[in-house]
Image (cartoon, rainbow, N blue to C red):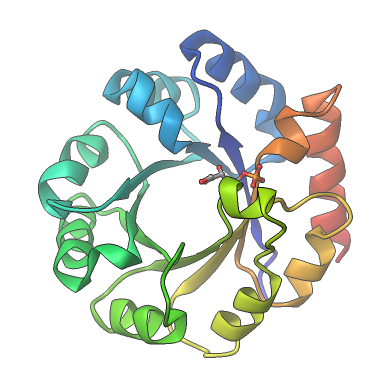
Length: 213
Ligand SMILES: O=C(CO)[C@H](O)[C@H](O)COP(=O)(O)O
């Protein structure tokens, strides 16, 4: 199995702080995620800025699209996004719209399974529709209520679908090797890096743990 990719979630609202944080952790991560609050606050110009500064990193825009999939995602792919996210709860028509926009730009669509009741059925349907990535995701509010993504990751990874599986939701130094072993292809880390005293050092630790798993 290939070494999983590490995705750093940039969840600040501040444009300059987001760019500065990306600079600090760039050596240790593969994908920059522009988090949902961040992209809503800063818009497509932040995609262009990160694309220009980091031509060799993948760029995920966490749109969490809920409707008008193709229309909403198209300008972000055009600005340089490699991956945009769409909510599985939006339904297949919206997911298919984002997949269509991704394909038109030689890019990828990620279906976020957050709050989907039947995650296996949604993942299967979206894989059949051509999605490249499904995201197992315990959001920040669900984390605050004590939830974790680990059981859902095992469920989705064990389906053996022809999509990559991403996992997000409070992953940190003590759990990152477990999610590698559970079959995650993309590991998302936000607070464990940006909330650390040294984000650069925390990102290095995560990299070493993933590489050693
Ligand atoms: O998409 C998100 C919230 O909806 C976060 O970016 C994602 O959960 C990663 O952050 P953390 O590691 O802090 O959970």
